[in-house]
Length: 321
Figure 1 (cartoon, rainbow, N blue to C red):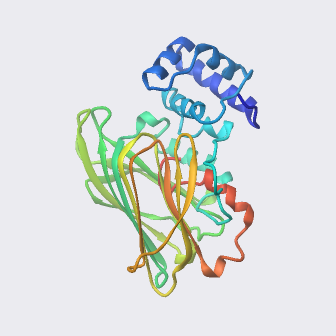
Figure 2: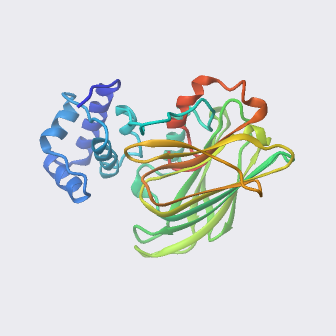
Figure 3: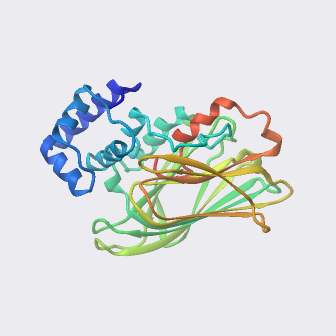
């Protein structure tokens, strides 16, 4: 096991979560084994006492499973350990929506909307989003269609939350139900640059039933103020499809695909097609984050290099933190 910064915080957070759960270490070990994430009672004891920390690879996968089992938000324990990177190219020096200091604000917004644990989310089976980025307009659109499976009988819910960067105009995004959903609770915190809604799927669903809904987010910003989009999943989805279409006189200088799973992350260059579109798809993906980011030509030489590491902690345009 390797010791890394944040070890004391990891042990303290894990220990308090275990105490709140009421589960014994033996019960936790058994439940993790049933999820194909085996870990011994002795190892769990060492982690919560701070005598050792999870290493890379499979151990990080166990920590991610612990987050779900103990009702914690995705990455809340993994971030205290430090997730490993894939070998090869690291995260490059480009900007992405969100920054490290905004992560707590994002989670506060989720709590305000009633999403205190992954169990409060419907299970996203298929997620599709089209980002329409138009440099000839001052409104950018993100249209999403989601197929969900009810985990319990009643009303299915999902969050849509934005935490705006200091460089972005501080205007509340407009959340527009298009099909099969309504807006419930809302967050409107201009002083914290945070906005969001609770999306409630129409009708009463029995556990196991599937429903599809669609909504649009309109952001009042110039195209060059928007530098990416990605989505996070608390559970495995069948398919995730992200598309971006660039309209108007300006095109991004370069675009990149970002993928972070339980155990690793990768960044891959991608190109616009002849229609000035990009399409990214993943099958059987999650838990994790998946997205697209880009850099505008006029900002290429002025982006802050220290924003590169913010990609790991960026906040989603929609979905989970």
